[in-house]
Length: 362
Image 1 (tube, rainbow, N blue to C red):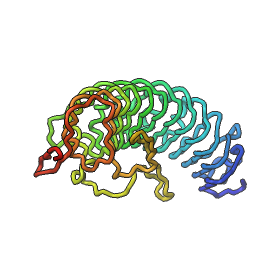
Image 2: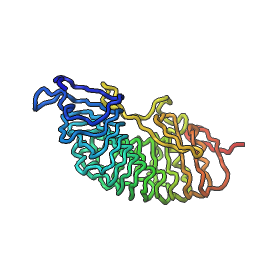
Image 3: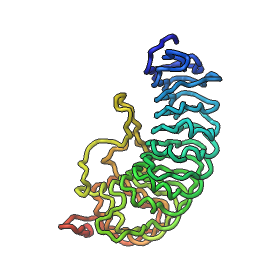
Image 4: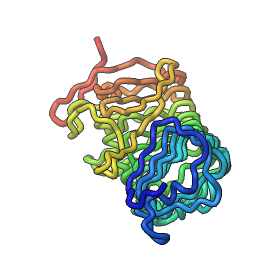
């Protein structure tokens, strides 16, 4: 309580109960006007709330995840670049002014709570998304639509809104986030057509639209450019349990270089998807996603860059399975069940010069 020079305080992974007292915000105070405390980690304890009338110092890191916090969501200081309130018992709505408190943040998570109401538009506004790398509001009871506009220059890498009650269309302005690697909108009530407007998002690795009300075909118009490829880094696509229909477009599978051995310029390794920041402190966010294989729901806590999966099950696709799927020789999971597909299955492919040769198994 009386330390005046502490800059980094980590009390995480203990069994500290009760409320967070107001005196902790004054740790590192050299004067009434200035605090040296910049990093506060109280995660993975048994804390249940914050003492009222608190005034947070100019923190850069505020980590309160995996406690039992409830009540109003505390507004973080405007200086924060990392804010994690996930896995608590917050059951109110997200305050409308939350955008002000995360104006410089590149990580913000309220995942795994019991939040209700809409997502405040202030989260999406203007300059805030110039710094965000990760926005995770998954596994709550949020409702309404994604009504904000993603600005030009958006540097968002992970947008996880899965397992909520969100409705409406995916905003086309999301295409402004050219650094996007993970988009998880699964298990909501969203609708509209396939996200063709993201076809130029060359960094996209994980696309989950599972268990919504999307409809129509998934064929996207291609530019007249023989070298253009849509989603060359894509390794997981899950659009199961929607109302997608029509034929499976043969050419799209040949664009997904990460699923084709020898096509990708990246060397295969055992890396996993994560968003790294504060490198001096080894701070990083690890992306995770839930996949369904043979009826078994599996949460991949680490998404290995070698893991690849296509799940188009439980839709209304018809016609033959394209031969071009045979080119995906690095594909681990393929689920096309519960559709109206017909015809033979052809799964042999190899490259001769610049052409892919497809022949059926004998």
